[in-house]
Image (cartoon, rainbow, N blue to C red):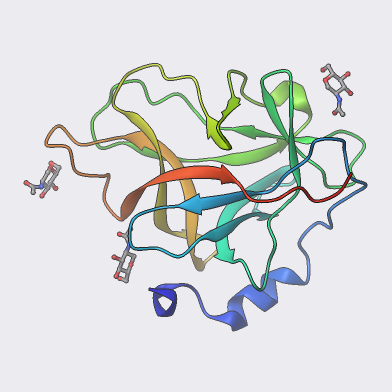
Length: 177
Ligand SMILES: *[C@@H]1O[C@H](CO)[C@@H](O)[C@H](O)[C@H]1NC(C)=O
Ligand SMILES: *[C@@H]1O[C@H](CO)[C@@H](O)[C@H](O)[C@H]1NC(C)=O
Ligand SMILES: *[C@@H]1O[C@H](CO)[C@@H](O)[C@H](O)[C@H]1NC(C)=O
């Protein structure tokens, strides 16, 4: 399956401008993908086309260890050396069958989404409907094909949104402390 991931060339090009992890926060971790038929890939924040907004992509663990994150109350914050943390955010999808929206990290914790917890090393979101899930999806970000984190709703027949596979996010390792 690794051959289906974006080429190392495009990853290297993006890597030049990606934000560097900052000082460790106590209890921090990185997140990794657990999905059927996929290797354990790390979740990394990369620049988007919008300032103050980062895209979240899955990449080879050996090349990128994953952006350090921590739970603050029920926000998921990323440590990236900005004056404020970047917080995990996704739009509500409700129970709209087959819909999938990108999950991003937005500057300023208040811009993030609440309701996250860690249960047995797994990042658990608050569900608005039973059909909601994280997905790992083929997408194009800034003109570059990526495998990225989405939030969405299964189709009524139980299949994933187009180009997506159901994803579980697990704590990968403690980055410090
Ligand atoms: C956690 O959240 C509080 C309240 O929003 C904020 O004041 C504090 O700086 C945050 N802590 C970290 C480590 O980001
Ligand atoms: C399930 O529903 C989706 C969306 O309507 C459709 O694209 C897909 O082909 C369906 N899959 C099966 C196995 O019927
Ligand atoms: C992503 O695209 C590749 C190449 O077209 C395909 O083989 C793979 O199944 C797709 N992944 C998902 C989750 O749809």
